[in-house]
Image (cartoon, rainbow, N blue to C red; front, side, top):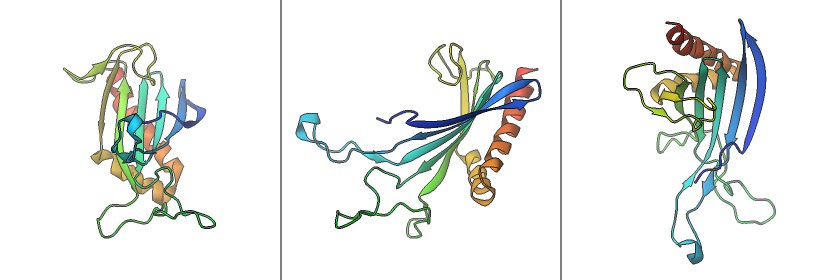
Length: 176
């Protein structure tokens, strides 16, 4: 079970005739590989921290999600003789071809259906569209170019890409 929105940084910006909200959420990972018997025993897996970038406005919200594989509680080098575990790193693990940081989703939350038969949640179930239906779609493959932009050009490149995505996906379809 993942904690949700363990920490979030939020700011409002002006976009044409409306306000948009930029939000970065950090969801702490977990290490549940060894549970005591009174909790069912055995392992329940582990997962690293997620970082979710959300740009929301009157037409819906778009998101980009990054997963930090080894950013697991307890996965840091120790100080003064405490048992050492693998270090947190942004350096790719060359043996496996996977890095510690990878993009997992570029998606949108729309209050209206953008294609016939699109899956949606009940009103009130989506934290980005409170009290509204939420039609969601996203792609892990489309998320990867934003990671490259982020690593090469910093956070403003992500916000610029999310603003383009917001306008391309939500503005165009919501106004047609």
